[in-house]
Length: 369
Image (cartoon, rainbow, N blue to C red; front, side, top):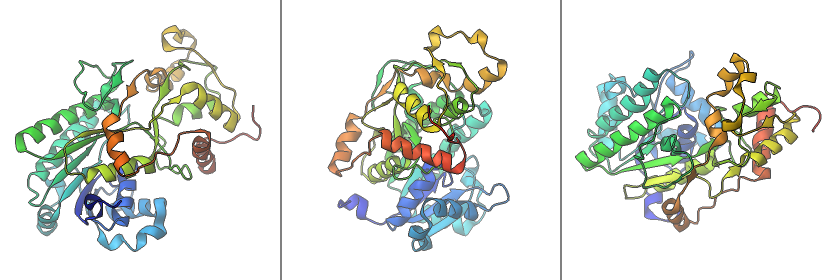
């Protein structure tokens, strides 16, 4: 990182500091010497400070200890005005010092209540933007969205310039992230703000060791298969998904987030991973019998129990996904930094599986098929 944008030390406000992407981005920001106001909430008998520092320890405790003098954790809630922070001295400091905002906070659970998703993903984004307008030194806002704002427009090449396609949505997570993008665009135009939007694909564990603190979505169907819950499953083996390691995604966002421009970026791997490759590799590694797969339009759901339907319904659209996320502009800019994507190949995925086995999320059987 030799450019002026990435070498200059800035004061940064980071929301979502205990999320998967937010916590890894925090690690990078501190390692690069930036001062960070990290917004988090107390939860499960832990203070906001404890939660943030626990995750820094999780990702790489030794490397971050010397940088934590630049970390100020704020107990706040993005759904509240001024994040619910009552200490006027803290608010004054944040508003007078913040130069860049990384808005990572979001509720990503597909089956969460619609109202809660809207409060956090839509109202929360509006509150962050309102707060940004009061930051005197602010030069840039980076909003973390998702590539899945494409919704149910299945079978298209979704480019960085696209947004409103008349799409419906598979769930309220997709819908609220799309609505948040609309709010971001409106604020940018009305207030002459410099805002970039980042749309990651499906984020998996670190490229080096498979480590992750979030097992939502990508991992769940394979845990079901390993438990023998399905003899048949509606998955199109000719379809594919775009997987990207958490460290790769966070590093790309860090680099691009320092650029003096307002753009939408697709944070995706250059190549997709086919369902057939992934399912076979998972089956061989964990030692489970692979279900009989067929495309959703040919699947007989009458053979399933209500429990099977309930467990699987949120994943079925993505097991039959035909969209391609095009990232031509993003790739061209990252090439300027000589940024290299680790391949999502057998070795990479095996490291992910090994971590799942290590912590017991999906246990490897003492034999292989």
